[in-house]
Image (cartoon, rainbow over all chains, first blue to last red; front, side, top):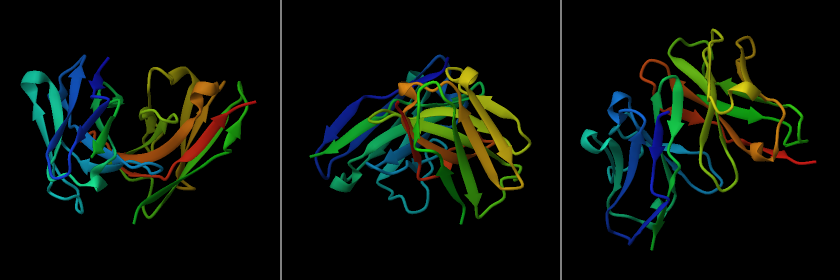
Length: 110
Length: 121
């Protein structure tokens, strides 16, 4: 079964850059698009990156996505961190009639 | 503007069946390019895809829940529904509905605001 693994938590200081990884297992992460969601407490998830590296309108260009086939992983990079970026982040993809979410990463900006 | 709104009972007893409905407004559920899905999130935990349906009635389910879950669609009401049988405490979660693209296996967007289901006697 295809699975996506994320670090449980990451932390970084305001103004810095952080990268959250999403590693695929049981399949090739490059076969289908990876999407990234931000979830603030008490709210539904919203898209910050879709189709590996596309940003929805309204998402600042401080957010970027990439795929590394050599490590079978996707990454979400956030530069110029602000306290407003402190949230949970989830990656999501697809394999064999299953839509799969990573376990989520709690980003702390301190 | 497309909006999705979940509705459900809130509290359900163990071993019972919980039924949730997602009402779609601002677009037809019968569009050819989209699936309509259910995702849940237990308190303090991550997101879990439950299953998805196409307007024709074709369904896909998470294998871990397949035997207890049924998703259906009512195009006349522009709604789709989720039933979970024989609920247990571990089914306590926020349940979200969302639309996702069929041909690109795209993102879930938009999402509903969610409805909390608590399993307790």
